Image (cartoon, rainbow, N blue to C red; front, side):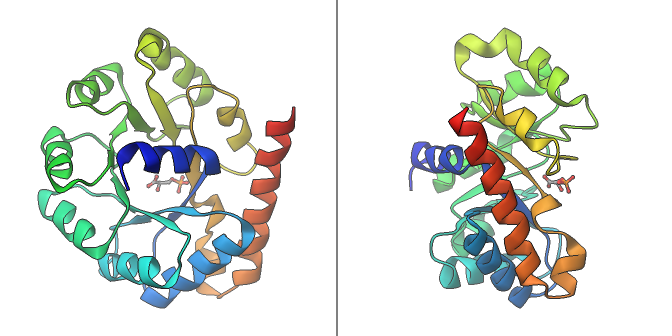
Length: 217
Ligand code: 3PG
């Protein structure tokens, strides 16, 4: 899929679940539970030894799930996640070499930014869809509104992550520059560990309902 198609899909779905797993099975079952609840975009973070294998397993076993590789912070990881079949990649921060490498591999990349300087570096290498991280601790929606103001004419888009939860995610979605929000509120570790797939589906469903209500008004 082309970057524009990936971003359109993320924007249509509005929600991105952040997934950190210790076992490949956890990734598959959590993804199935999310899909059942209507959440079809994940960031599967490269923070555990099984992450790459888990990405490829979710791509193979969960059709309909758009799989982003998260915490991609080295050039080698770009190649590995592309090979594993990730549809796109993200990172908490910005590394222009990694973005250029992703462009070479045809892997859509969403870098993380937290300041205007980082934002401008991202624009310089052709990225105008950015992960705002960590959204809540750096100032939440008021910060997002301030930082986005000077770049509105460039149509920069944001996906805030970090500290977002079921009670505050909708405020972010009301901002026209925000195409989606993400976080681990959709995938609580306790529910993954207790294999409580039903409750993961329930949280996904509730979150999707909140998004749908907002779209009506
Ligand atoms: C990320 O990688 O985007 C964060 O780990 C998500 O942050 P959260 O756990 O606060 O949702």
